Length: 558
Image (tube, rainbow, N blue to C red; front, side, top):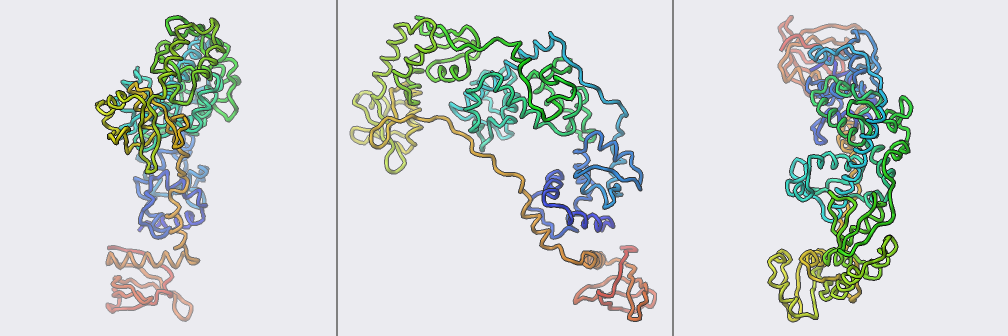
């Protein structure tokens, strides 16, 4: 047993639950670890593999301080020192042994952030605009239907084809997750409750939230460093250079960095600005480089709409519910019978659609578009979808031919539609049936059990994130429950048990009745009933010693 486990166990026992949770999480300790007490914890944390995991978390400054510390030097590592330093903040010998095997740290000066040129800032602003637009497209797609994920958590190939991935999709997904706009639920990527308000915000509001949460998610080791120094921020973490490159790529996409690593004016308005501190971002310099958002557009006779610039996001979102939109042509929208029908399924009305279009059109509403909306609305409701008492769905229609068509439609087979008199029934939920019928171009409307039309909500919102801070609460509670008042006695018992298991030869210091102390060399043979049994090598006799009389024990050999 390590002689350093005893003082470390005492330090662990005196730490707060929050400090213990942090060290257990950083050491990748399983919540169901079979530790009984803090001595078990100390021994496990002093294993070389566990120490290496802790060292990988250290920042460049912390690693340098640890590397240069002498045997009697105190090192200030804050909470990171738990499990690495003794009670006097000196490096534990097992930790020092691991540090000596790690690569040397180059003694290079830290770089100072540099301000991007006007041309580089303009290009950074264009990237930021495109990135935020891409995140919005991702959220809109996830709102229509959750995005499928593979086992590794990456978006599936099917989703990438559907979203026309050009290589940016994984980066956009990472930004959306870091900003709290999407969350993984099982094998799906779903929008969160914050996504809807974010989608309705202006570009500056959208960018400020994503950039701020990206900055807040950066590891502390790079928060005060120039981007050029990020790859060496955690010198003992083999995986860090790749992660640093990924974070730098995300910062580049957000327009926080220029191609040469210099920082945009909105990232560092003053040295030590928002990218390196907790100050809020000021997007005014960024906004000045971008075209202004517009709140009007042109409606054309060919059933298209053209915006003369970036349409205000809240208007863009509403318009998309009733049009087909190609992300490659950001300012162009097309009305179709299917897109208008989709808006009606979501709870809109012909009057509401036309009123909205008159409000934002610079050219009025063309007659062909009015006719399309009116005709689609007149057919809408021919197929009525309502829930039944058992959680299934009933589909009815005044048009018998439509019922027959739906009954034999191969695309609707997953719904399991079964004829029952003058209606179709399904065990699938009513909202899912209504959307499936609408996607198959049937004029379906969702109604409640009383026949009143209701909106069919397609979006599946991710619930609140599961709390993770208490992941080791049960383990910590078990360690605390075995934390007795006499730690020295508990440690002595463990040393004796280990010696007996190993049949070791030990040097035992015993307190005699007259107050003196005597050392005996014993071959440890058994422990029980509060007594240690062993053969005294000097006298060649079997001795039984009360454990309460033993002051200390030291293993001589196994």
